[in-house]
Length: 518
Ligand code: BGC
Image 1 (cartoon, rainbow, N blue to C red):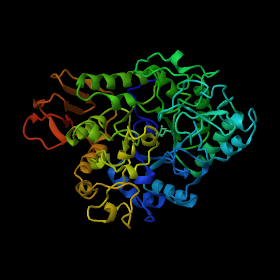
Image 2: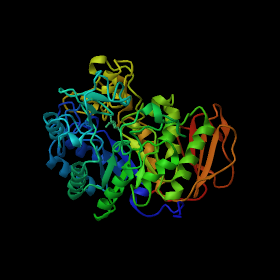
Image 3: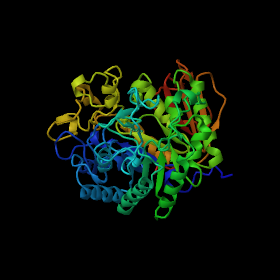
Image 4: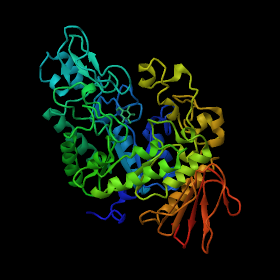
């Protein structure tokens, strides 16, 4: 069995990876949409923050029905984000700054504007162009072929003009590919090579658990038992067949020099099933959403989620990954109830063994924007739920860089595809105090290599050591005494502390020995 406590080795095992939601990071041409030139100009912020890599959400050609997760050409940059030359220049600049770049790949579905889907609609039922997608015959009573539901709400089937049904686990503009088709497998291997040849350091694989559907399209109701993570076992997610695809992709990654890697966005019903995605011959990492979903009003549950994630990864020898926010969930400064608690959570996460994923703007303490006007919203979740679910636009509002500048420095013209709240002036990168906390933690974190060892602690307090670092998190709701002893010097606190008391919703790092901060 590989030794999980040995965290030395490839860069990604301990990396801090920063998610850039390209549309909302920085706008280089003033049209109100973030782009690759804007990203290149702002890369020094990420170098100074101290992250190892960036993950870019899709910037490929797309009608943008789902913010670019509806790709119409996997080998080109959407004009709203720039050109392939802009991508190459951005990648070279990132590498010059010592930042690696991983990019999204979206293999579960294409855009309905993809040439393949256009051909499929023009093809006859049963024809070869339809075989690249999941088409089912027209039904006599006009009801969908089965009870599968779209993740965005409503049925997962839509009728083509000739009455056949096609499958879309997300929006109707995102038809699911049929991974039994050799065309599909060959095409995506080519797409991976296209970007690896350009020099990307790896991929984030969108819906990595979704590409294979159960044979015969069985009703979800029949297999809808509940898994350990409280997730239903569904005939279109986490089917055993996806592992064959990931093994083939691993071989491609390994055939390139320079430690190329892949991280799966995978949802599985048990931690053990999730760990299969990171077997030594599969992907390097999988996102761990259990920590993100932990109930912070229940400190024991937070601790249990940490233990369960570490233990699930042990048998396959993969590093754990930690994430608190991303472009799909409510920002944790809002979700956890306060900026104090958000920063306490971040300092806890940054002390954990493995790799961390940060979402743009969390280093500024940005909250979710809850009051976007209906006419500004763009998320298909909002439209498909008839406005009952606000969707994910609130975590995608363009970043504030500079307090007094137009669009807070996001774009020189003041344009912004979603409106920024005026109060973000106080959180702009040039004002934020949270950014200093992240910088210090990311720097100190580089010294940490060891496994986590819990200490006995008062109720509501999480207390552990890694190497010389002791991390104490007070989720008890009231003040607690700090550990005492020689060398117990607080080197970092998620908010100012006074004397030997740790206020509620506060994390401190205490170093029992001197560590390098370089
Ligand atoms: C992405 C979402 C997207 C969905 C469909 C998810 O995993 O993170 O933003 O809407 O896949 O591609």
